[in-house]
Length: 140
Length: 81
Image (cartoon, rainbow over all chains, first blue to last red; front, side, top):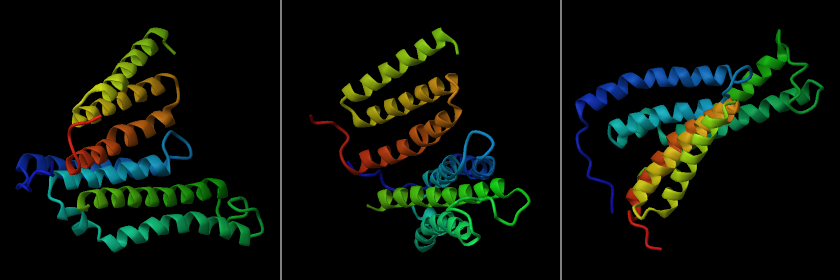
């Protein structure tokens, strides 16, 4: 059994999904930003952001993902999130504390800001990894 | 924590899990697995583990279902064992 042949997407499905995507992405960003104080966090927010792109691809055609996010950018951001995570830990080391000890960071509330940066790194990596799996499954 | 609500959700999730293993049509199996994820998500919310429930709703019921449906379309729809 193969994937059904590509059909021109129905205009109702297309319009509804396209108008839904920004709200899903806004919710994903909210989940990432409030991960340290409420349920949610980088992983869940990243999955929600990835799901918004999956919805966009399902509503339109398979070239949409490649059009919105080029494959090189997807691979680069998978690594960039990990780099952000590990880089903040190394910055903490350089400032004289332990790895990922946010205490000496030069911000007003160093632990909140440090955790936020970590969550953003996790969110970027999870979103890019989920979309990479999705792209590889579609193009397999 | 409401005991009777917990019990109903647990019975529904066990029914969905057993049906997902037993059914021959793999696409139906994927849909039953998504339903199982939904009931587990409700169960976890009801027991106070909101963070786990959030992950279950986003990953279990959302993204993995899409991945499984694509995989079923790329391979075979009927289970042979």
